[in-house]
Length: 206
Length: 206
DNA sequence: ATATCAATACGCAACGTAACGTAATGTGCG
DNA sequence: CGCACATTACGTTACGTTGCGTATTGATAT
Image (tube, rainbow over all chains, first blue to last red):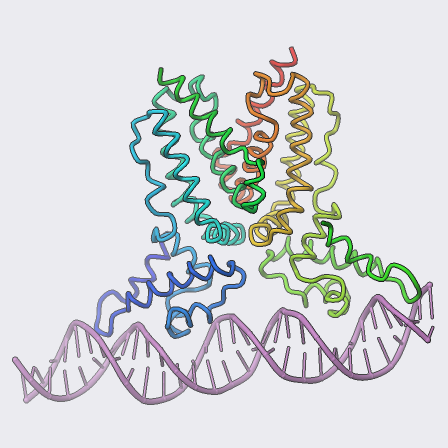
């Protein structure tokens, strides 16, 4: 299951020098920075090693591939921090709106990095799985929580919470593929989608 | 705008041997096949040249990059053929359902290729633009056509055609990122989305 | 306790392979 | 004749691997 984490626990017992947590963190950090700056396809192991001030063999010892490093970035929550957690899931429509906008703002702010992650996810199932677990499922859970306040598959949503969540995830991901200029050119239906969702929650709550 | 097509019109006039349409088609065909078989990141210029039985310099003469070749695949409609065009845009709900399912079936049938294209789109704005033009906009146009039958922004849809198209595109993209087994595990919001869309068209038409 | 040793991780340097993008050379088509 | 083509070759970059010397750790022996 969690091969990614297990890699850190190789030869747990016995003697010997311990793995440098410093080196591990530096590699993940370098990966994040390089993806943000240059795009995932332009990231090389050698660049990572150079920036992290780490030997190339050290990287190959602990990670099977470039994708595995990126997957671990997602896994260890270094890419998708607090905003994914709801501020106050009380079911209030205003809270919902606030939270949705916070998530969207975070995604926009980290667009270059997330674009690289998504691109990798489309070519590597392991990355896709981590992305689902650490981005899609939490969002889905929150939306489901809100939706369930007005009952499962209520008239307020007409769609199951799961379908609704996946649709939003899709819209958010698709939005990422477009340049900020495109999105800013009054061509962004995200507000419209939010309004729909929030207004329905509002109706359901009243 | 269309730098991609212009590449074919270099030195349009005057003498000399004409560009081999055969070679061009062979390159695009090889790109499609290799992406389908091995994934975009594993496609190399040399593999393309070998499979297309074409010299490497010929490829570099006409295309600036690997992404440019892929973008031209999308541009020249070799990737997204007929199903994107509506079969009979009469506004009948049954037609709508049929068309939506046809598009979906086509996408599923070509999932490996489309995964590669989407992955590239997330790292190359030019590819993303071609994808928008040749997939998102046609879908949007069809939805708009259907929506307009019951009046612009009617109660039947509540969302603008643009927002619906974005939702649809997002769902398609998100679905592509998941393995067929995942999608088949009754975890697919597509049918639900279709049902909602179609049932509303049906109501609006009556 | 302190010293010693084995085991392991580390950075560094170098290797052969693969793909890159370009250049040189000839053939074939218009 | 001019240009596009295939072929071949080249230097560069990144790959993934290996050997080496050093640093750090736990176990063992004094």
